[in-house]
Image (cartoon, rainbow, N blue to C red; front, side, top):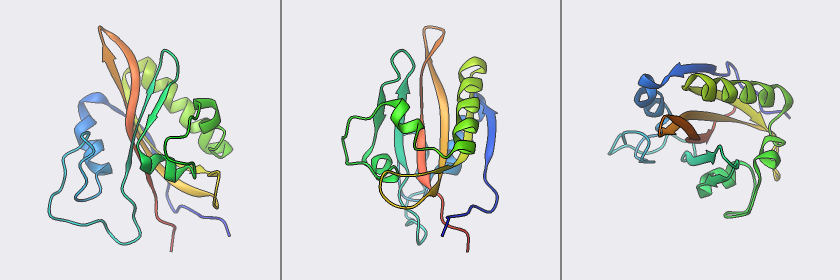
Length: 154
């Protein structure tokens, strides 16, 4: 049976809203360093902790936390290229992600996307991707953000 998502999120947002969007991605009592932790609370049932990720634009080098490896069904610390990762996105989600990514880099905007992925191990599932560009010396040098599983529709 396919994992369905009732109303996927797919939008871009200005960087001045960064704190708000990373806060929305914050899952109680987890401080990824990108959002404000909501201390004293536990994760809602069925939700895993979000994972941190970044992608250097100069060479597409990926840096992932162990939670991101788990989302994609890959061994923690495995060497994986961006091309290999992008191939794990289902076609419609891949196209949306690439479009939002290009727009984010070109226009210095963050984005949030619910993407359907086909992990190396396990069935297809939905993942929420929250991303924001990072610039140094007047140019965008990387994208960074959070990835988390989206619970199955009831």
